[in-house]
Image (cartoon, rainbow, N blue to C red; front, side):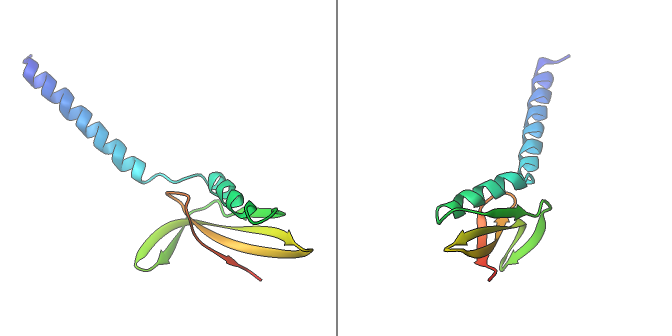
Length: 104
């Protein structure tokens, strides 16, 4: 066996494996639990939270001209004896909150 051909084959195999790994990592999503914990931490800065939820399935969301895969969730908190409810939309690939709005 020719050593040059062997080294070339190993190099090509490593390059191919690296390319597949990079493509696969671009498709990964952040867990819904982590997104919910991050959202709760952000909302806690404005006061205590009384409840929270998150839809565990990823769904499409459009904020033209960009298309996202997102998690949707909500936060409840009591302020002066009154319940405030918010819904948030978070990017499934980064966990960043894209939008949050009151439901009242």
